[in-house]
Length: 232
Image (tube, rainbow, N blue to C red; front, top):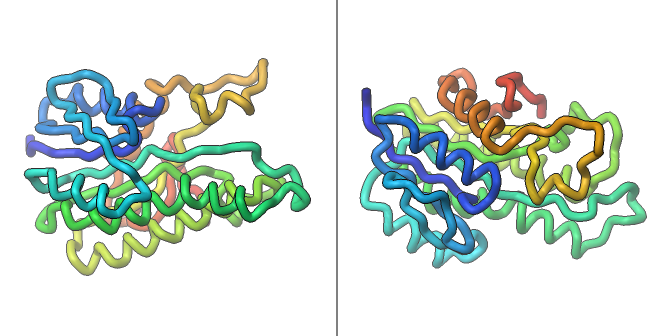
């Protein structure tokens, strides 16, 4: 079995941390480079915790240069949902900019500095957590303007990456992931008493399966935790 090196961004979060632990169970994993703003990550011999500022290009460039190997998989498990707008009356420029800074721009900048760290002579995968509500075709309820828009913009960035990376490596696969509603700080303010929510471990297990099953025909698409395609 071919050995692999992985980078996971958002390792201090519920899903990112769970993904670190899931991949650490694989015998063919050499290193898991676990990035977060505070430098926290689950403790494991294969997990290397590193601190990075997602909006600081110098920080990202230094982080990318610190990796002493080529990567096989890059997973971005970062994002936030704060006080979503119920109607257009609630929308502000400050809120819109905040959502873009949290949900969109980090993936774009991480891609700028870390896509070059991927192998170019074998299958590689680059994925970022999106959201079902970022789908334009699937939007039946409206509202949540800035969050929806930030995730829709993220999907476009991933689509662009998928096209550009193909020119460098025919076996590059770039795609988005919807993790479902997970018990985490992000979803806590919106959880309803009688609803069921995924544990981070369950979501990570499902997402890992989705990631592992992606092939060239999946390049540029967005997938839910159950491996179904989410339309743009």
